[in-house]
Amino acid sequence: MALQTSADSPAPLRQVSQLIEGWVGRMGTIWVEGQVTEVNRRPGVCFLTLRDLLASVSISVTCSSSVLDASPAPVTDGSRVVLHAKPTVYLPTGRLSLEAREIRPVGEGELLAQLERRKQLLAAEGLFDPRIKKRLPFLPRAVGLVTARGSAAERDVLENTRIRWPAVQIVTRHAVMQGASSASEVMNAVRALEVGGEVEVIVIARGGGSVEDLLPFSDEGLIRAVHACNVPVVSAIGHEQDTPLLDLVADVRASTPTGAAEAVVPDVREEVMRVAATREQARLAVHRLLAREAETLAQLRSRPVLTHPTTMVDGHQQVVHELVRRARRDVQHLLDRETDAVGHHVARVRSLSPLATLERGYAVAQRPDGTVITTLEQVPDAFAVRLSDGSVAVRTESTQEIPHG
Image 1: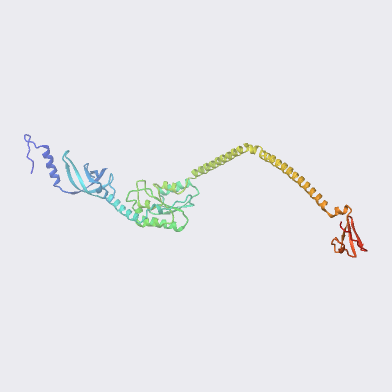
Image 2: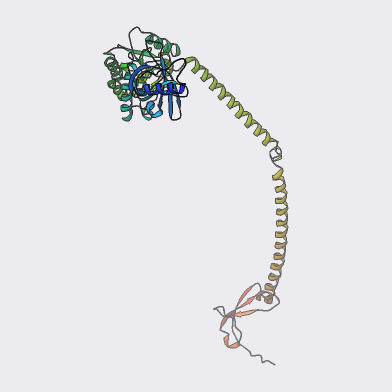
């Protein structure tokens, strides 16, 4: 029922606000389409501004963080979405807003949602695992290039690779880089370069484009072919903001074809400068080493033991000479004592020798067998008499006993 009011009987503002709230609340939940122009995320709650695509009409939208995160595609500024929401009025200010219960992307957003689901499935299989990515060769002899014939991407890669390293060989395989047949042609070109065995790295290059233009480079067949390729693959499909699935499966992702050229070959000028710098560093290192060793030798030469190397020998030589002199003196004294002792022993032996007795006028009678005759009974018919200087043969004629008395 219409509210009955007049200038004399106006309705209180609070009543009007409550009536408006009731009328809006009776609308229930509705589906509404629009473009997101602002996203403000806070802990547990998010605030969006939804704008009509054909009219300058916008409305505030609130939702929980879980509703925003449940969207199949990321909701960002410019996203086209369909909201399942309930209109509400905030009584203190009378501001109309929508309380979103579900958010669905439409148009490009729906396309991005499909790509996101495909991305998650392929990632679950491990196709994007960084641990399986192959390293690019430092200086490839030949680089494979898959791109459109006569394209700016082809020109950028060829010019920049030859500027950076003129000796590099570029093997180009042309393919349609947009449209329904693009994925299969790129896949065949990659396989041809791999089977040929000439190239050591493959670059797939295109100069960016819309989401629809880059769809072939998210094709599942192409993604699996690049994953199975034994040659490292560099993706140079979109610009920095573009992320086709080929960028994720490729071993290296370059934001532009020029960036791909910089990734696959070094800059000859930079390498020459590095070689020169390395040589200079090596020269300085050798000079420092020689200077350090020369200083060490100078310190060693300045030490007394090396300045006069015979000093220690001279001191020990004097000790040795003194020891030798003492040894000779002691040995001489010992020899002198022993010589005297030998002389005394010789004198005693001579004094006790029978020859000394014989020299005093005595003689010794010996039987033929050499035994000494001491009694008359032992005297044979013939015997020898030993003198001091010889012996005399004697025959017995008679014997005479001399009594002891």
